[in-house]
Length: 274
Image 1 (cartoon, rainbow, N blue to C red):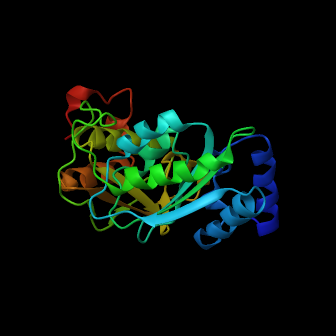
Image 2: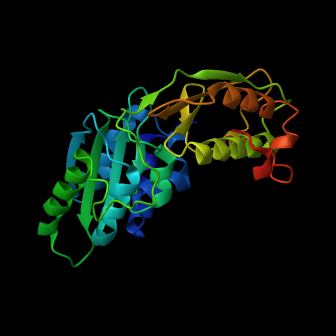
C-alpha cells in the first residue's frame, strides 16, 4: 500500500536527521512498496536538494560500461561524503544505491549501457563543500571510461567482462504451484540464483512480481501476496546467456511443493546445478 507523500517525506526526514544514507533508508523502509516509481525523483529532490542542498549530477552510461567493482573500489578513498545514486535502467523502477555499500552494487549486477545515473552528494559536516564538484567529476569519469585491465583501481582477481555490451533476456514467467510462496520457496529461489550467479559472475538475475522489480527475494515472503496460481517473472542480464533453460526449470520446481532439494540443508556444491 502506498503511503501519502507528506507522510513519506516526514518519515525519510526523521531518518536523515539521524545521519542515515537515503539508499540505506530505502531498504530499511522498503520504499518501493510504499511509493510509486514516478514519485521517487520528487522525493529525492525535496529531501536532498531542497531541504539539504545536496549537489547533483546526472548522466547516461556509455556503450562500454565499467564493472561495478571498479566504481566501488575507486570511491573507497573518497568516503568523506554522503552519496546517493539513483540508477534508472530501461523498463525498470529506479534503484537507489549507496555507492560505498558493496551489497548495493551486487543487487544491480552488471551495469547496462545507456542507463541513467543521478548522483546526489553532500560533504560530511565540517568539510569543504568545494570538493563536491571534484567528487561528481570523478564519479562520472570512472563511469564513462572502461579502465585498462591492469590499472590501479582494477583488481585482476575480479571476474573479467568481455567487450560485449550487457544485454537482457526477455522475462520468463514462473507459475507458483505451492499453496503459497512461503519461506522454503524463497530459500530455494535464493540458493538457485546464488548458484547461477556464482557460476556466471558477469550475469545478474532480475525478479519481477506484478510488474514490479523485486530487489530482495525475501520480500516475496514478507508481502504475503504470492499464492498458488500467481506468476513470478525473471530475466537475466549480462554479456552472454547460458543455462537459461536449466535456471527456468529449477525455479519452476522451487516455486512448487517440490522445493526441498534446493534448500540449504540439502543443497551443496556437489549438486552441480549449472
